[in-house]
Length: 91
Image (cartoon, rainbow, N blue to C red; front, side, top):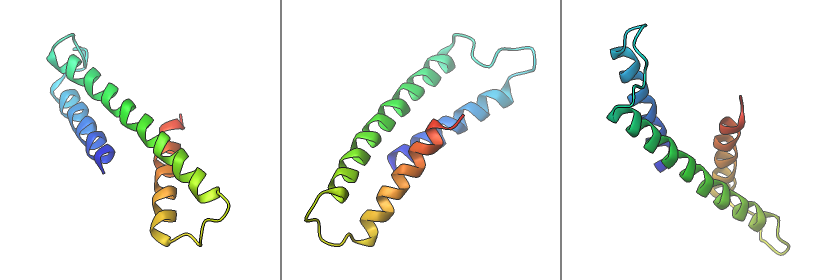
């Protein structure tokens, strides 16, 4: 998914930057790396906000009266979204 790709890119950038830094050099030093880190963090937060909205709408749909039996793909997607959001909220 788009969120997974962004998180992977974010983590890869973070790991690469930290491997290049020494113990005495700050990880983010106001450079373009710092700006890229911030931009990616904002974008991930925005995508997670959109995922929350989609998840809420899906949950509304699945809980509405008169909905025929739910298919496995819909239930899997809803659970996957919940899992992603739960990881986001854990400390």
